[in-house]
Amino acid sequence: MNPQANLIFIISLLLGTTITISSNHWIMAWTGLEINTLAILPLISKSHHPRAIEAATKYFLTQSAASALVLFSSMTNAWHTGQWDITQLTHPTSSLILTSAIAMKLGLVPFHFWFPEVLQGSPLTTGLLLSTIMKLPPIALLYMTSHSLNPTLLTTLAILSTALGGWMGLNQTQIRKVLAFSSISHLGWMAIIIIYNPKLTLLNFYLYAMMTATIFLTLNTIKVLKLSTLMTAWTKIPSLNAMLLLTLLSLAGLPPLTGFLPKWLIIQELTKQDMAPTATLISLLSLLSLFFYLRLAYCTTITLPPHTTNHMKQWRTNKSTSIMIAILTTMSVLLLPISPMILTIV
Image 1 (cartoon, rainbow, N blue to C red):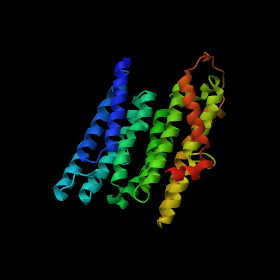
Image 2: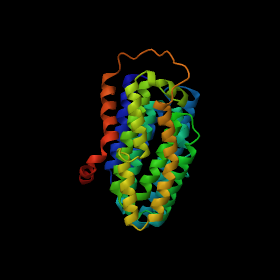
Image 3: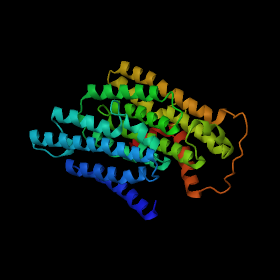
Image 4: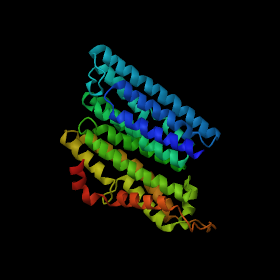
């Protein structure tokens, strides 16, 4: 793709995200979401492969339907209450429609079918954008309307997302699909707590985005898309593969690593809200996704292929990307000891 066109699309993405996050009026938030959708489409389909075109078409159709529902819910609320302010979403039907629309935009169960397919058809860098920055505007809208959402509906969506995200990721061999189901599972954790403690949802999202960015950038550096090629990639940059192992375990939420922090705080908050059975259930369901993270980690560093493959050594790597991966990996693994400081900032 032309670098100038690429730059325009990236700036449009940032602009759309900023407009949605900073707006008070529903029409402005909707405009930001539309700019986002239109800016990411060329980035998904830039390889001109039939699968990429299919992914772009699926993405466009689902996001258009979700945007129409956002507009419909805000208009219904304005009709009943006379308010266009995002925080004044008080009509029950409007909040129900909005929850469905945001679930469709994020890829929460039962509106999750598009996400693995779109991520599989996109390049790794676009997949990174789809998994992180494209999730921020819908989560910001949920954050602003969290006081008027339906707790039962959101809890049901969250538990189903965690269950299906873990269960459907078990049998995948394509790494992008595994990361898509991992994203669905993490979104379940974010959705379950948004009503009781919205700041925890944001903290969970920031840490998830950081760990996912590390994994996508690492995979992009070692040029790996499948589990079978991941097994032979350790000869390229062995130290990076060792750090990928730790980042995957952190994303799984194992204790001494950063990824344990949001899970720990969410379970604590759910227990305070007298939802101990729900906390137990979502913790048990996250064991499903732990299995495929361990599978990825096993293929990354512990499996030796039966024959050594002759790779061309990467004696000159992209320096700026290497520095970014180093910083992100360190943060993805070592932030748990400074959790009290993180909590005072958030």
